[in-house]
Length: 358
Image (cartoon, rainbow, N blue to C red; front, side, top):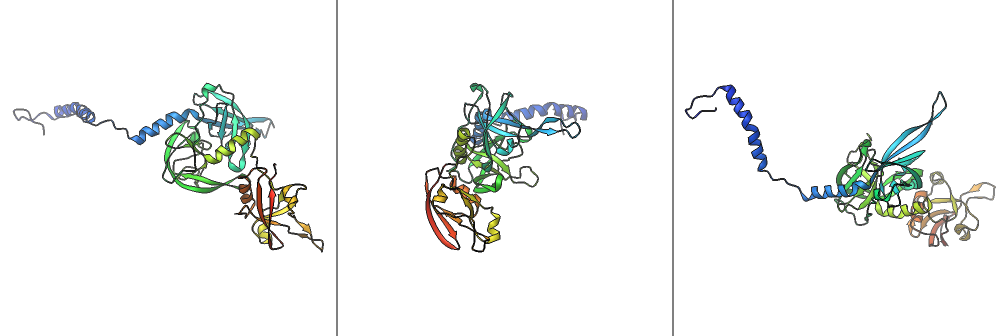
């Protein structure tokens, strides 16, 4: 109850008016006493975002469809995603699934300028692709690649991308697990994948995953969610894999891995004939496997086809299927000598051979 100096009661309407006038003043005085805090982590997040966001691009994918009535072909949007500037030559890295089947790829830079991109190379089995734009160098700000070898669970990470078409959006989190595996095109597996709780949604694919120093440590590639939206589990291809693959895509347009010189049988043969490994369907004449004496399927004494050699190991790495064999070969170069363990009619054998160029 408000009282005057002579203890006479003020009218209710006047008291209400006085309270309304004093409230903003009281709030202002209260707020003036609160310091403007900025935590070290907040400052770091803002600095990394301001540093890296000019390197992140928006990728749109258009394809051709035929009108069912006029039979005319029309260009229609097929999908969208993110990417980032790799170098000052205009190379842009993104996911393969972002540009898969594209008739036209358009890159939108942070200044909202749009540039038509040409495909330089792709590695579907690693979900990576490189396109190139002819933008002037002053608009190109490449990211700085870091290293994923020393990552640890709990490390702070930042993801920048274009989820749902919203340009240059930032989410933060930590590395929640390492060494994950996710499926890729062609029954292949992407290994040593980074798992993070940083929110990754449709449209973030192909965007960078950064550490607190603003260095690239991964390429966001997938989310684990029945609904298709982030539920706290996202995956990124480690930068050590990216640094190995991207230069090959720029130079050759594809991954260049050495070969044994065999045609392998489908993995389904393993369950049909009850074995683990890669069955040799046939060897290429004059190639390493042929020179080492490996044998493909052959006709038995009664004229029926018999199972040939089954590769079960390369340089001490167990080979259970085609994906295992490809992952081992990707760590070698043409000219490397390797030990191949194989089974022939149930007998364990070993041979040495020199890998050839594809």
